[in-house]
Length: 192
Image (cartoon, rainbow, N blue to C red; front, side, top):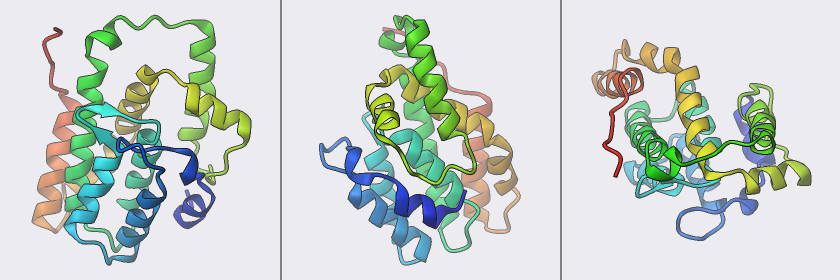
């Protein structure tokens, strides 16, 4: 993925955050991180805008895709990024085990929509452009698939994260090991 192209083309104003605002500010946080001018608060704000009290938003899978791309860039603080990504993983894991997720009934139509969504999300050549039809699919995608897609993105990038556990930076290695362990052995929550 060409990160700068993706960031330019992505329809930030069409996606909301847990704070009921458009995601244009998320783009600015990412640009600060990419430029190396971000402070820890920027990393925290980024993750706060991708999840809220263990619930994900329509922006969450795309935000995770960007976070994964940031891990291979030079300037971002990988330890802070990995720490936030661990929070995002726990939110997706918890939500995927919620009573609502357990009660979810998949239909052919829902599965078809998710297949279209997932194809773009997992496409490394995707440049961030979304036509109206795809935006409609993204907006109407069942919340269940947000959790599933985030967990699947983490699983697909397990090797990248595990590779960072061998980082020369001790804090990056520690955070990568914690996230890799969480992915390998997800916490089980009692259903209420």
